[in-house]
Amino acid sequence: MNVPDERPTITADAYTEEYFLTECDGFAAYLDGAESGLTTRLETLWRFLDAAPGMRILDLGCGRGEILIACGQHGIEAVGIDYAPNALTLAQQAIARARVHTLDRWISPHILLGNAQQLPFEDKTFDRVIMSDIVEHLYPRELKRALAEVRRVLAPGGELLIHTMPNLWYYHYGYPVFRFVQRLRGIRLPTDPRERFKFSHVHVNEQTPRALRRMLAQIGFAKWRVWLHDYRDYAEQSPGLRQAMHLLTHTPLIKKVFCDDIFARAHK
Image (tube, rainbow, N blue to C red; front, top):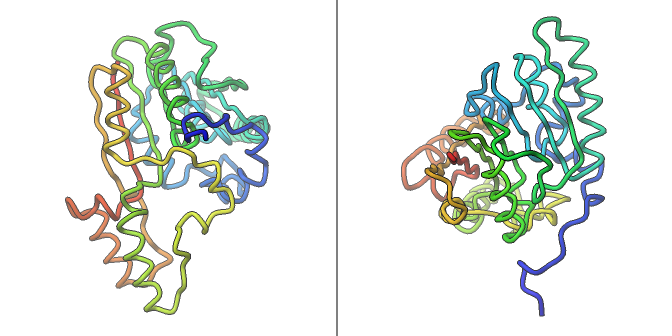
């Protein structure tokens, strides 16, 4: 019997247009027009990326292309690569719309169909690599290969930025508490939090901060930092619950089981 790390790679056709336009975070903003700006999650990633003109950026698993567009609008050279043809079609459409609305210092991003485990770039090519919501889609053996490839294509002093969710500590310990509170409010949630999402089957390698830290160490990055950061405003919740969620996701120790978003930086 195969163990998870021996299962076949998820095929590219699993990432349908429906996935990118109904469930992949930021789809509403994309449908409104990519030129309208980044979602809160992507704004957070953009701030952490600390990109500047003169750098070369690789967006690994670029999806609909929002980060690529932000690079183009700031005059930064960027390349996006994705495994799913549907993603690249949507990214091409978004880039074309954004180009029309950007008058100054636009640098058109390049997008490629490819596999994170075999990057078609020379060694030491990029100053920044971003892996936004791709880690959880790669089996452990695949993630190890992809991270080794990222390290290879990073220039000396280059930096990898990661965002992944869920935080398994939240799913195992925090979510049951949240589910209980919601039930008291008359809101019934499934026992398994994954049942809330139609495409949860493409999450094959969900992380904890500890597991991601261990993986980055194995690859041989010179230094790394893994942390939990909650960027949400919980505007859809009642004022009392909004305040409680803010407290739970920002208080040291407690946030380990209530904050659902893992970020990491790794330096070559």
